[in-house]
Length: 449
Image (tube, rainbow, N blue to C red; front, side, top):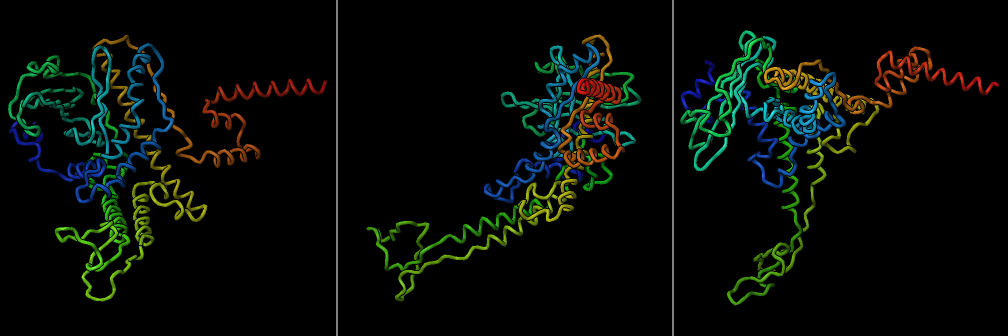
């Protein structure tokens, strides 16, 4: 039995499990993403840089994204289930960006195939293929009733084209311990779950792992994905620190009027009565200068300049174009710099889109297996289409101008141009060009008559 299950059997508190590099990193990314960076005040947390990076890359990846399943009645049934997940694509892609990846795990409920979105800090990877693909994991589910926590562990293990799914339930007074194993049937919501299920003739797990495409620099021996801001965590902290300096500059530099104690009225208890405590400060000078104005010079320009440099470094390390977080007035001085900067974002988004496509293809395969297992609908072929907004990952207008030039020079044919522009196959594009030429010839003949 693997090490993680051995730890569970010993009933050790989950927080006592030794953290390796990746689990520690995932905890760090989660804290930054969820704005739980304890070293900063609530005012500074308003920057929310980690969440902004994850959200922006998820937005660029999924904007105008659509995907569908076609080909048969089986395909129509799959697509009906599938579209519920596609509507949430921006959300789970953002979680994957922030934490390095998410699991998309289908399950059956009332004759429908639903999909659980399991974030990186909510499952334990146990097995990988020789190619580094995740093929085994333990999933964690819990709820509280009265004074007890009920915990269910679901282990997926793939051995020689046989998938074993094992479910165990525990009852505990603490959310992070496994104190007493209980039958699944003793919990109403888990009563219908089979403790051990074996599925033969299957060579992939019944879950899909959406993994961020960046190289793992936290632990190069680990096949797990890393956060999109994994290489910028120290820079993010530097940005928080610099922003703290900016806030302190304004706080400490508030205008004040220093006045001698003898120039103010006092109440019946002898306490000084100031008209505005924020504006006035008392001094015991003992000389003739009763009032003295203090209006310090702010250094916000220098601090903001330093913050902007840090934000640019964050953008570079996260594969974002300059100006995504930093001041757009201070970036992209030449046309070549603009092109190179935007291309960095285009490449990052394109890589994430390819990762999303692979994960969704695996998910649909798993959903199709469920259809066979539970005889939900007769067998049938299916195909999956993906449509991303090309303008996000390419400079559409520049590419169009380039292709028009090639068309004018006879290097590119009309059907090739049409195929690219309308995303048509060769047969359809040639047919449409033929129809257009026939109409044009007919109009020319009519005019000549």
